[in-house]
Amino acid sequence: MLKDAALGVRLPAQDLERARDLYAERLGLLPTESRDGALRYECGGDSFAIFQSMGRPSGQHTQMGFYVPDIEAAVRELRDRGLTFDEVDLPGMKSRDGIIDIPSQYPSTGAVGERAVWFHDSEGNQLGLGQLVMPGTPDADFL
Image 1 (cartoon, rainbow, N blue to C red):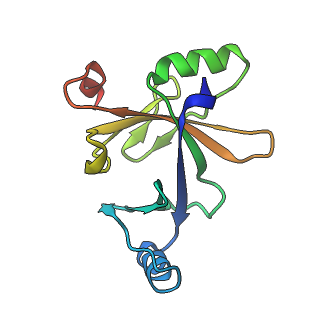
Image 2 (image 1 turned 120 degrees about the horizontal axis):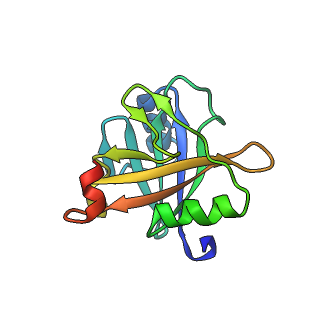
């Protein structure tokens, strides 16, 4: 299942403007898209995001994510394989059965939001699954 999923790389920043400056001035990368609390960059046909951390230090946020077409089916399959998912309870973000609904993602994706879950690998790296929610789909009702 995950071998066919598109990857999403996300890096946390304690200071988003400082990160923007470093990526522009030192790496020559300008964001292709920005939204409140996040910047998206494109490189060589791939993309990555830098987001404003929620007070946690680097390394305690999602390092890599897998985009799946049906997050509930993916969660069921991975739970059947023994994987456990994190429950989230943050201001404006509370999971239901591990899944959170995030409105207002990057407009270039065409999505109105994303459904997401997180888990940790054997080395403590935080990984995630995401499903883009497109306008007019049943999942858009969750947002």
